[in-house]
Amino acid sequence: MRVFEKIFEAVPDGLLVVDTAGLILYANGALESLFGYAPDELIGQPVERLTPHQLASAHVAYREHYQTAPKTRAMGASNDLLGCRKDGSLFPVDVMLSPLDIGDRKQTLCVVRDATVRKEIEEKLTIANTVFQSTQEGIVVTDVNCRIIAVNPAFEMATEYSKKELLGQHMRVLRSGRHDDFFYRRMWDSILNTGEWQGPIWNRRKNGEVYHEWLSISTVRDRDGRPIQYVGITTDMGRMNHVETAVERLAHYDALTGLPNRLLLNSRIQKTWERAHRDGKPFAVMFLDLDGFKAVNDTLGHPVGDELLKVVATRLRENMRETDTIARLGGDEFLIVLEDVMRDDIVALAQQLIERISAPFDLGLAEPVCVGLSLGWSHYPEHADNVPALIRQADEALYQVKRSGRGAWREYCG
Image 1 (cartoon, rainbow, N blue to C red):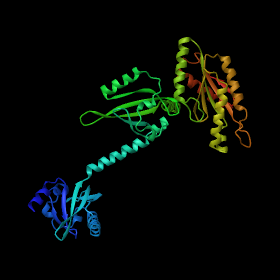
Image 2 (image 1 turned 120 degrees about the vertical axis):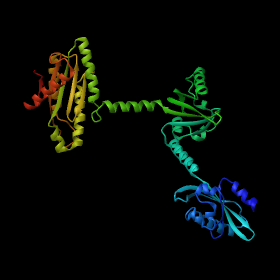
Image 3 (image 1 turned 90 degrees about the horizontal axis):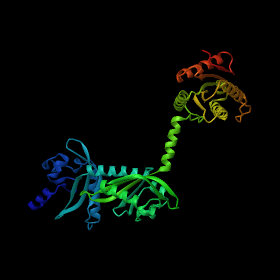
Image 4 (image 1 turned 90 degrees about the vertical axis):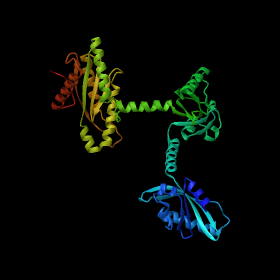
């Protein structure tokens, strides 16, 4: 028995011997570091003190199984239990059960291990796998010989190869033929010397289409620092450009009409002023406001009002030169910047815009929708020599039109 106890005390895992009633007959010293109980405190106590209800239930189920199949000597295991320390705190434990029969006494050996680290690793692996499976970036893992050992769904989609087709293949299966040996030598010099490489690369899909992507390669090393795997993360350059273009458009263009917004307008009008100031050429600022737009919104609803603004923007664009800028400031307010233009041209355009916008709009309703246009403008350098003053003057001219009856244009008069 002394040899038996010495062996039990030498084991780093917690060990319990439990009788058929679920009472603890023996506990080794390792249990104290796990649960905080000295071995003597546990002798004769129900095993459920350590894992309330869980371990006791597992022990009963195991004993019933063992009694009905006494030749079964394999250990039973429970990996979803919570241990209860002496101070009442809970922690995950792994428990393995095995028959331990001494004479006619049927007992159970319980091996208890702290599962905290295992649980943390499992959670991290679950998160990593979720990212691997759901990310929009293509991920490929190869061995040190560049044979593919894992790919994610995004990589399958990008290459049009299935996982089954890719596993075991050398990465050269994707080569486009657009890069020479020198390109790949430089890539591998970087990987071998620094452990990583990134840059644009042309690859070929299964259907033969050549595509441009951004590739980042990292080296996975063992504990001794030796390379064991390579991980490649790919992003389709076409998708990147599309996203960048979409973000750029959201930042600088009105979502409803597609016209430049205030941010882009400020940039363009400043550049117009710089050119005019440098080259001595005039330009004009026009402030526009729809007459009767509020009534359309109130009587026909905002969806109709939005559709009207889209068509108004189209009509305004049709009368502009490529060098001119028309922006929507918000609501039914617009601003136009006309480069290298004289007064007679401004007057002609103002009259043309008023006539164009005053024409009925067919929006698919029972009756055409009608609105008017009021317009005020200022001229560089005649009225002011700086942008803020020109905008303020055009706004003042528009205000004068609104006060005097609308549906007309007015030049700023200081």
